Image (cartoon, rainbow, N blue to C red; front, side, top):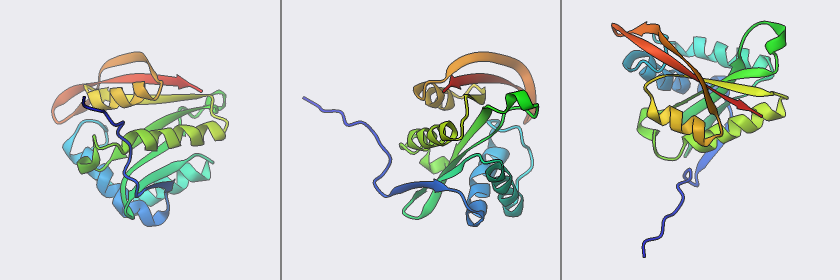
Length: 174
């Protein structure tokens, strides 16, 4: 009889707060998605200094920006930013997660996302929103395994690589 072992992150994986020193690697991971996919609607590569500023801005708000490092190399990151600027939204965040393309599907996403959700809960967050450019089965699965529920879909709200892209939203009330 074949036994199945639950997949988990490699034993040498460390999830920690991002630092400015991680900005070059974070930018490299993100720029793959900027330049090669429609999962982000950003269309111009982001430099390391701009990424460091983004990390600083999120952390200055008291929100988490985490990295997953395997054998000392950053292989993914996740962060939470404000959902909207109006003060009544202050207890809701939008979550973001990206993995180095060669690490996707290898057990890094779930523990990183769990750590992010734990961190936002500790910040007093009430609700987390995840926006997903569609179709994206892997991201949908990640969110739903984390307990998010689909709440809506906007059709053709982004245009990238000469095609219209839908965006779905998932929500987790903590």
